Length: 223
Ligand code: E4P
Image (cartoon, rainbow, N blue to C red; front, side, top):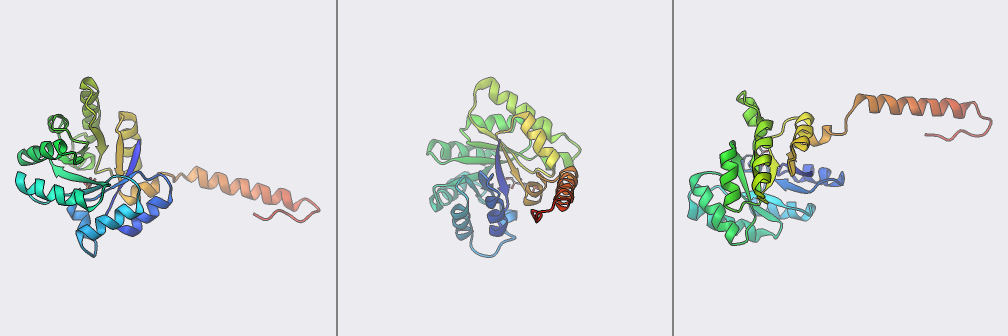
């Protein structure tokens, strides 16, 4: 499973990149609005940090506007994947862009039928929003499982990009469900390695090592 980071903040992206396991970045207008600077400059800077797909979302709502914006976004950098919402106008733009060779990440997906339509239109990625479904008392992870099965049934190559993830448990569940990509908020990415037994175990190993070294006549190996 690939890991993307869900932020437009350059410091957070640099930190995630330094971990050595980052495969790409997703942004959206809300994440962009938290940053200083111009949209194109931020996207270009992100592409300079991460060697992978960088999602840049359109804000037009009509097909022609979305297509024009998608072309502008795609021209910013070869790593850019254009993000388009799965509305009736969006579907036409997804089809036109995909036919044109522009990679599209279809966003704001909340149903299997939306995912089916996106795949038929040639989307590169489908982004089901897990956390926002959970917030409504629905089962976001069930949607990932359903989309996985539908895509496998028909051999659709559209990649399932699990979005709106809120916890490390979501990440495990996405991996079990066969999501191709999980896009993680920085705090969730940071929590993936954390386990109290790892910390306790390491402390015990080091204490035992120090105690053993202290019993020797030679200078102890300091750790
Ligand atoms: C995905 O591409 C979106 O940017 C994101 O995952 C939305 O997450 P949220 O529901 O936490 O805003």
